[in-house]
Structures are given as structure tokens and as C-alpha cells.
Length: 57
Image 1 (cartoon, rainbow, N blue to C red):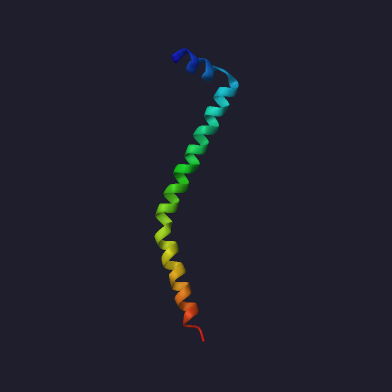
Image 2: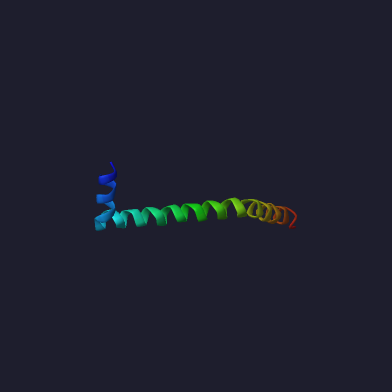
């Protein structure tokens, strides 16, 4: 198993796929952090806008 992993890393295609997997994981981490940070603020803003529209003559 270890030899297969080392051979996979030494090959250019395997290394490139590993790099893209790291980039994808980074995007997922940043996206989920941003979503959890901003979801309350976005909900509050949208609720304020809908209240303003409901009170507009």
C-alpha cells in the first residue's frame, strides 16, 4: 500500500490530481466558513428589506 502511494505521488498525473484535491478542499473550507459567518447577516438584511417593502405605500 505504501509503495503504491509513493508511486502515485512520484508520477506527474498523480501529483497534479493531489494538488487539485487540495485546492478543492481549500475552496470548500473557505466557502463553508464564509457561509456560516454571513448567513445570519444576510437573513437579517433580507428580512429588513422585506419589511421595508411591506411598509411602502
